[in-house]
Amino acid sequence: MEKGKNSKNIMDYATVTLLDAENAIEIIDQTKLPGTIELIRLKSAQEIWNAIYLLKVRGAPAIGVAAGFGIYLLAKEIETEDYEVFYEAFQKQKEYLNSSRPTAVNLSWALNRMEKVCIANKNKPVAEIKELLHKEALEIQEEDIRVCKSIGEHGLTLVKPGDGILTHCNAGQLATSKYGTATAPIYLGEERGYHFHVFADETRPLLQGARLTSFELHAAGVDVTLICDNMSGTVMKQGLVQAVFVGCDRVAANGDTANKIGTSVVATVAKRYHVPFYVCAPTSTIDLNTATGDDICIEERPAEEVTEMWYQERMAPEGVKVYNLAFDVTDHDLISGIVTEYGIAREPYTESLKEILSKRNA
Ligand SMILES: CSC[C@H]1O[C@H](OP(=O)(O)O)[C@H](O)[C@@H]1O
Image (cartoon, rainbow, N blue to C red; front, side):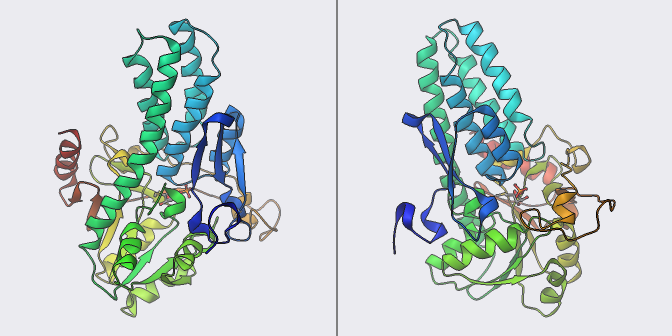
């Protein structure tokens, strides 16, 4: 199989790459998938902001990695040796990038982590701080790979060879640095001969499931069946699904979880048909400062995503009212378990999530 830039296999490409010497971030433009694998380079703050907002790079962990690389590149451009001047300019760029999308906590988590490097090293030369930011941004990406693989290992304990697995949206390799979160058990299982049967919800309106999940799983040789969102109940009723794995954008302290719009519907239907429903969550996505799902800011996006095939042609009448929330909140009592890199949290989540985070902080 061709490797590198000429490969036709999406699995041969990194979701986000730092091109330090070129002061750029290279991403797969996910708005062009699956038709075209196009790598684009982001240099300016606005290019980075736009790429996140327009979902050219998307998925909570991938957004965090891109934000880490982005704020490092922007910090490099701050030409001063005065720490206070540097830090003020850094904060301005950080707040700008942080305004691109509100729901996925990984964006602010990564930016705050990078800011802590500045603060912790305030007495060092600015040039040295920039090098430390470079190191931290790369560590965020390397950690993401380790974390997703660990989520895969824990998730694999919940299913058995030949199981049917349903997923919603894309919490795959394209939403992370490698493995994905919801797809991590699927990819590890594929390596070990589990031969899962995956059902990928198309996930209206932006079709991350159709355009991205079915694309990457098929490219990886996984048995994947694309279904329209309205089919998820039927495949569960027919007994074709033994578990649901989804990603997440923010887990509140009580276990309520924000994920792509429609996730709470899948969880409700899974409860009806007694199908275990698992959220795959890097601990970076757990936000104990947010008490419940009611406190999670849910991004509302342009009507055109619903009225048109946003990347193609119109699908609804001009001027029709639209309500297009990009995420919804699945109540914690619909979640069978929250699969993290430190193990699986179960109800009561107000306690189990704290235990999981204590393992991380140990
Ligand atoms: C690995 S979590 C990815 C998470 O992000 C997606 O949202 P978007 O495509 O708008 O970035 C979706 O909620 C996924 O579950």
